Image 1 (cartoon, chains in turn green, cyan):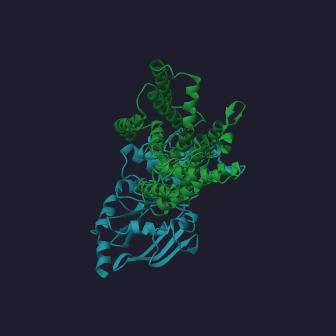
Image 2 (cartoon, rainbow over the protein chains, first blue to last red; image 1 turned 45 degrees about the vertical axis):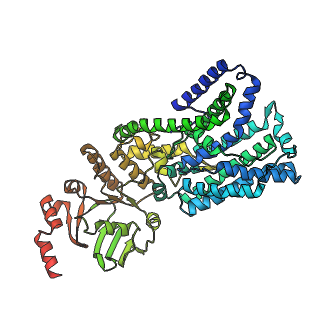
Image 3 (cartoon, rainbow over the protein chains, first blue to last red; image 1 turned 90 degrees about the horizontal axis):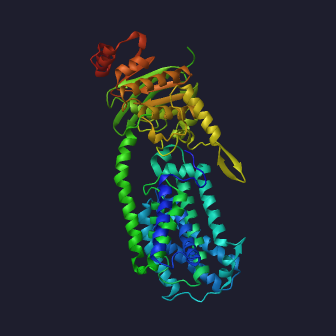
Length: 322
Length: 256
């Protein structure tokens, strides 16, 4: 099967069309929507979700999932915030995010892979543990009024383009290369199809699963670095809708919730569609309380649609004679 | 005829108090299709699992190309050149044919320490194998999920050949196939043998076996009760050997 860096299939084109329709409708509905300032806001608000979404894409493709990404981002953000508060060199504070994230990914992998706990249950359990950890670490208070060093560093532009865009492009290319151009990607997709068959084929299943959880953790931690740079505070409720947003964006993008099939470009488009809708609905006067309803509704709707259509195509698949 | 590729001598397998195999002697030769026949529970699957390294024998010896071997895992058997194609083929439906053939043993080149797949080369090798086996599969990049049961068997056989297997064990390869597909897989089996592979075929279908096998070994209650060359037997005799109605089997079972 051939995959270009940005090649798109029907699903992805229709997602792009959905973005276009949403932009058109929201521009008509609100005079504040179609402004360059608002476009910048939408892109800015997409940074963390794009990074987390890339990691979530690999996890779902492998037949895994991580519902604790929001809290992992929170813990990493506390680390970054504390490092900033302690006046550590700015590059070190920036690296604190991905390092803490990778360490938490290692812990998740240990529970899920070595403990043989289903990923959804294992990460749900860790979610509970981490939530309390956040309470304990923050002592019920926000980290706020953090120094501006990181904000300045990540706010700089190169050739008129913000650093965040370069980081995301680099993360995208790295994930795409790993997935489509190296044995690792084949192994990951084979595990997503059937772990047992992958093992029979001589694939190092444990190793591949560990690496994927660690990479996803590091990307989530990197998102925390951008979060702290942008808001310069860490609140108790940080990341509470991140897992929902990430899973919704990835599934919208055409990655199979059952594993074995994924689309990185689809994830990027899924993130943009979500953020466009969330921003636009706010501008037309829908309270932000309703955002998770829209996201959750989209996720459930898309999955229901996929089940309804795949039942057809599955039966066809089994009987196709070429 | 040349020396056998594999010789099994006095193979015994016990599971607790149950004796699944008692004293199996069998020779497996390169370039020959050997069929293992027998009713359910006759011991042929257990025997094959020992050859494949999935079970260790309780007693007896296995010689591969004249030297004794001890398999402690399927990996050991694979490195001795023995590939087993199980009934539920271990193929990934979401990957392409060439990806499946090379899965776990991909060709790669390292650039800045990153192992990049050599897709072109893998595709060429698989294309060659598909043509050589006359499979009529034109596109090695097609997803395995879009293939028929017989075509999937062909892919599994390519995978075995690509691992340089000298002995290919096929467990009920035609069990789930339509008639035309069965013919295709049987001719693939012949072609494997013509290529110089030793082939062991497990099947319930006597018509298939008589058509494709050079030699047949009949298992019954954990023993090898008969061995026949294709030229020297017929389906009726084989059936009576399997069911135990044959006088030879009766005599054998009376003495022990």
